[in-house]
Length: 298
Image (cartoon, rainbow, N blue to C red):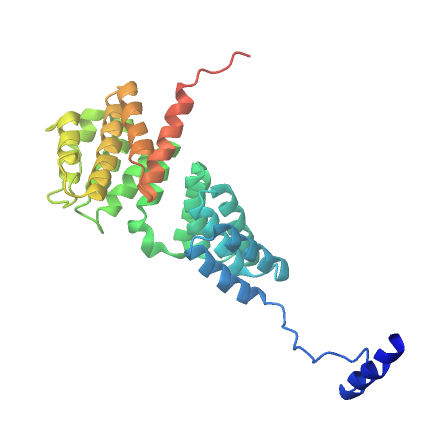
């Protein structure tokens, strides 16, 4: 049988156009690998879409390709900040400052990251460096005032909040932080007598907090007023965050440590807000927790 099939096989082979056995396939144009800039654009988009791991991998790859890419370090620092990895954010901002030591805005960003990481002195140093190049921003820099409070530099805090009043005269929080610093220097009575006057802060919780520090409302009344909002869950949470934060700080000035800790913890845990004052509550809660832990015997 094989000899009968052979001619048919031969005809089939002859009918097919000859193709060299090792002929090169049709050339496919090879794609160039993505550049660092292209990877960073994709990383930014991925992070916005919630693909955090993918975004971080692309950013890391971009920085392997271009280790001097300032934008890459800034992006990665921002991602670390959003992921609450503050020490890593500080490290990336520090790398930017190695490459561009005169970048004032990066000192500001690193100062914020330092504060969020609980590095208070370092935050002040960075804020000072930022303001050296941007002196017109000094009246607006309430963040530095809060860092002064936590560093124990109460006299500097008083001055910072007094100058902030010139650009933000109806801010209850500014008046309260001025009071907090002043009370540490001169005591509660003198601080109350020198409380910055506020006539109208439109935030739901603000004026009741102000009246509490004036001695005209009780903490319970402040909390009840904050909880009165029933038609908006986000607004209610915001009110209860601020009310508990400032009730806690009020109790601290009154020497009522247990009540201070209770309300600071509520603000920092139950009603924690994703903004700078949320970080303030979290940092304060950590400080109080550390104080509450008995020191180990040597």
